[in-house]
Image (cartoon, rainbow, N blue to C red; front, side, top):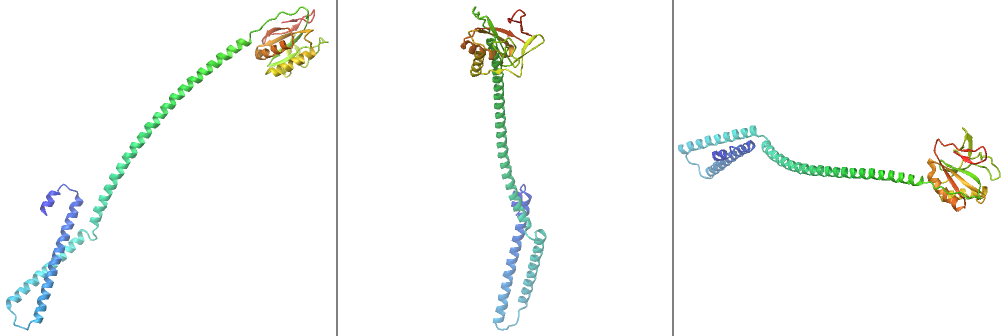
Length: 297
């Protein structure tokens, strides 16, 4: 027993308690077996005494018997003391159960710590992956922003180039035999006829009005021109009112309608008209001269 104690001096305290409990239990079992053997031996001796004829008892045998009884009583008392000591130390063997339970808890704790370490590694890996994805998205967003800015810049350049192209006005010489003119105004993306009919010099009050000493298109009236079909309908209406063999067309074009002018000009040319253009802006005022119907700006 002393060797075991020296060997396990540095062991867990619960192991020492378990060792003590086992030693006490072994001692109790040893004393119990010894007492049982003595009882059996004594019973056999009594049985032999009953079967043998009655003889005179030897004084030495009586002394031996008294000694055996005394030893038996001492063993019984020792067993009782050991049992009481055992009951005090661990009445329901709870210490052993507690020691086993603590071992299981330690094992479960170690397994839980191992699983937590694996979970932490997986979480860190996912965080790194998320960080990389955010960096990739940020890089993509920067590239998209640069492309969008470049596209917007190119669109502005294209719009400016288109505007410069549309502002190219071609002045055509008039045919000498054609002396009458009709005024067509292009503003707000619409076409306005300044004169009512070819037989009258009166203004077309449905499309234009006189104010501030000049002729101005009425914004709510006019024929909108968006495509070639609109321009062809406008040209057909112009031909019905002012035959191309008798009139030439003066086209007043404001800054906001050069795109419509390009379409109208093509339709007028196809209809056989000669024309001249008068570029205008918000400060332009068109009037007819006092000596006739020649247009001045």
